[in-house]
Amino acid sequence: MDNREAIGSWLSGPKAAAEQAGVEFGYRGERLGLPEDGPGSVAPVGRRIGAVLVDWLLCSLIAYGLIAQGDAIAANRWAYVVFVALSVLTLGTIGMTPGKRLLRLRVVRLDGSRLGFGGVLLRTLLLLLVIPAVIWDRDTRGLHDKAVGAVQVRL
Image (cartoon, rainbow, N blue to C red):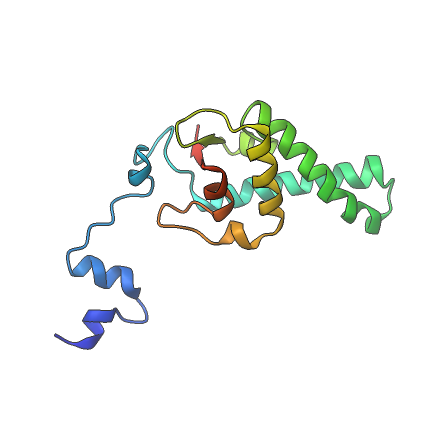
């Protein structure tokens, strides 16, 4: 056997080499008991990033127009506070922020129930740190979701 087949080429990566060797990875969310696609399946990464961008833009506009009254430097600082408030209020009550609603996503616990306020607050603070949100597992769940036992699913 060629060593490139054993460790995977730099283009295909180790996952492709493992799949060629017969390892079954399954689909995203299979280990969590979620469907492969459709409602209730793990949300795609692109839609999740889009939802965060929509929420951040909304929070920035609120901070700029209502709180900082046109001062861009102050608005940047207040945007974090507005983002935490928006996330805690909306995720804690209906399970989705305006950006998630627009892109048809919801944050739920692994058992399908709603995330509590403490979990939502911890998840939001970890999301603001960015690093936990960009480290994923095989199911594309970020560390901020894993820390609170949550998953983002499609509506």
